[in-house]
Length: 620
Image (cartoon, rainbow, N blue to C red; front, side, top):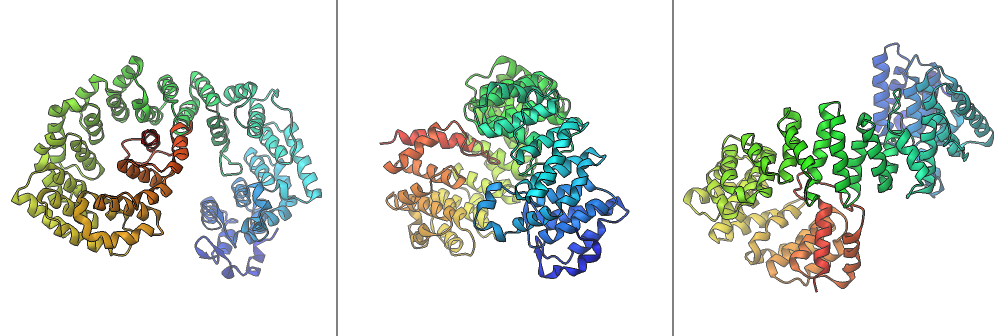
């Protein structure tokens, strides 16, 4: 260990952390000895920000370790937080230590320093405060595989004593985990302490992998239902809490996860553990929506606060369209919540709309909002005569931002019937409220008047490149004149910075964009994959020939956002290279979701991926 008196012996200005030279580290370490608790807390917060920034460690991190160890023993407080800082600094995957780059890495230097000072920190395992003992165990776990034989034997003996005698069950459970890091497997599934049984079952499940033995699932479900009332929230390796680890374990085995979630919910859904696990399963596995939504329905009466209720209702709303026929019990529960408190009414109504329950339409018209109106336009296309006037009024009332974008998107679903909303779209363009999507809507409307062409011409001159492009395309669609759009896109495609958005915007020009081909063709080999994808799609739209586009798109296709866009473009072309079919079969048949949800996406990207793959597999 090193005392603050030795801080000036380190050339901190020659070392770096997350924000450059580490000259501020000595001041922060000295602040750990202040009598003012806020000062100490601020210093710890700053140290987390610079020598352990979002999980990354730096040159200055290892030299700080012996000073932090001294502060653990001699500073006036927050020993548990200082111990946890040491533990997370040394966090690493044991496999990393086998890599050629390990000896010279910052984390290897941290582990070496921590292993040196660990004998001085072992007395913390006997501290009177449970939080200090738990944090000290995590320090031991962080370097369990890097200790010299003598230190290891001493540390293991001290941990063994805690496992056998500590009065706090959670500490004994932590000790069991550390013994496992030392390679000790302890038969603890029959322990009288639920915390210890749970830790033992989690370790066994980690070792075996899914599917888990029935006995393990029973322990995970029974002993994981109720959070430790004194849980300190300390993470293990990977900066995850025990609750996060348990959720991850159960999510890997979907049947075990569903069984555990059902039991947790039946036991009262304490801490919303069961409903949260159900949501994770829906996000991870395909075709388990019926079971998950049944869990959410069962969990709703157990929620103790508005936030937890909103969580359940939001989950239902995200997945209810995947049910062929949502049950009456579920729809009735949504209807009741949709007429209840304002905070829970909004997600409940959105879910009710997506269930296509006829009662939802009246509630939407009575209490219209952009998101529910947009969903209603999609789910009740036959109600255009009732919904379009409300959408128009909501736009005219001054809707802005994402709300206005959602309303204009709702109009786009009504085709020719949406032309009656041209005055509102023109006002949005004039006042620059969701002006880009408004310009696109005006272009689709097919109405040409001097006022419309004048507004579009003005928008074409905008310094907002997205608006300029949208207005130019709309002007072309209405008038057939290509010259203004060609001028705009020539400037956009030769400007500095990303151009893939602009390439995507010019697709409606079709063959009229042929003069831009000399600018598009070099982008087919751009380094940035989004640019290559958009250039290939644009090239096909402009030339009508798939020959150059198909190989580029096929090479990009994968379970990624850009891969999905490439798949959409390939589906529009209607040509599938034979070498792509095995990948498409994987996309179509995987039981796991291959893409995560994206903000503002009307359809879950993974569902799009699977549907497109199935469609293309039927293409000759």
